[in-house]
Each structure stands twice: as structure tokens, then as C-alpha cells.
Amino acid sequence: MEQNTPNIGSSRVKQWFLLKKESLGIIGMIAIIFVWVKLFLFYQFMSVQSNFILIWFITGGLIYLFFSSFKNKWIPACVYLIFSILMFADVAYASFFNRYLSINMLGAAGFLGDVGASIKAVLKPKFFLLFLDNILIFITLFRNHFLLKNKENTEISFDSALQEEIEGDYDRHEEHQEGNKNEFEPKEQMDSSYEHSESFSEENKTEMGQRK
Image 1 (tube, helix red, strand yellow):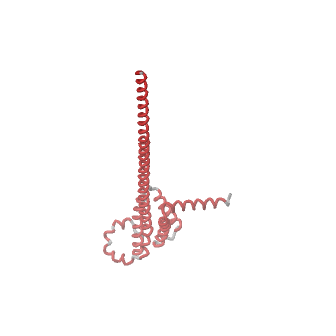
Image 2: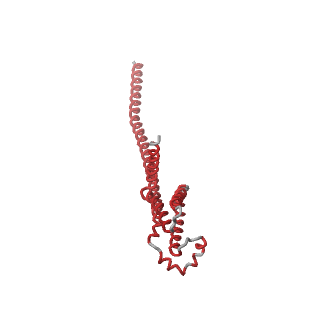
Image 3: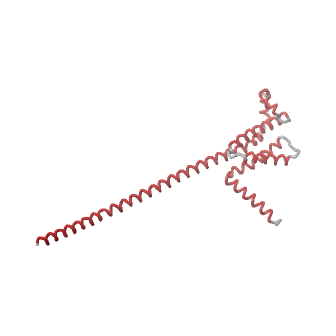
């Protein structure tokens, strides 16, 4: 029993992975990985050391639940992009001022024009890695959108072709019925003419017999 438990767990994980791969594609699976990488880099840039692993997993789990709670994935993707912009601003601010960016500081962003050049100077290319998962998420959403649209167009084309084929079969059946009807009409006319001639001959015979 204890030996079967790990096998059941691994099979469920494998099944979950295959379902996600089918629905999201390779790029979507890479995006999920980069979400965790992004959180790891963010906490490293912010020099978070206390309870790092716990905070990392909690944040990743909340992001996963946030995306799972929406049927329309464009909504959480846009919100998550705003979240990424705030993370980027927080990292850039912390690298310059050596402290966290607060909500009050966001409200006073218009007064930071004098230090704008200095902030640009301390921006590092590695900070832009925080947007890599956002790019992959939007690529996945556009891919799924076009795949769904092509699938709908294919189903419409198939239904139209099937309807045309059914109508064509019905027309051919009607033509076949009309052809059979036309074939029987001359035969019926011939039978009627033959019966009429026989009746006429009988009448002639009867008349000649009466004359005799």
C-alpha cells in the first residue's frame, strides 16, 4: 500500500502536466516555469532572506489561484502585467534608494522628475527579466485565441459541406424518382392504347356478328 502511494501521486502529476500541455502548449508551460523564476528573481533583487521559500511558494500559489478563478484569461493576464510593472518599479526604486517602494511614494511619483536620469542610470538589464513571463503569457493567449477561431471556422465549413452534401443527395433522389415516373408513364400509355384497341376489335366483331 505504501509503495503504491508514490506511484499514484506521480501519475496524477503526470496527468496534470499532460492536460496543461494540451491546453496551454509548450510556450504556456514555459510561461508557468518563468512565473516561478520571476518570483525567485524578484525576492533576490529585493534581498528577501527571512522565510524566503515559504513566501516564494505562497506567492506562486496565489498567482495560480488568481488565474484559475477566471474563465477569460485575458483579465488576470492584464492585472498580472500591472503587478509586474509594480514589481519592476519596486526593484528599480530599491536599487537606487535601498528601501522598498511604498504606496505613498507611488502617489508622489510626479515629484521624482529630478532623479529620473539617476534612476535610468541604475537600471540593470536583468531587471527586465521580470517581464519575460508576461510576454510568454500573452503569446499563449493569442495562440489559443487563433486556434479557437480556426477550430470554429473549420466546424462551420464542415457543417456547410455536410448540409450541401445532404441537399445534393436529396436532389439526386428527387431526380431519380422523377426518372422512374417518366419511365412508367409510356408503359401505362401503351397498355391503355392496347386495351383500347382490344375493346375496339371486340366491338367490331360484335357488330359484324349482328349484321350476319
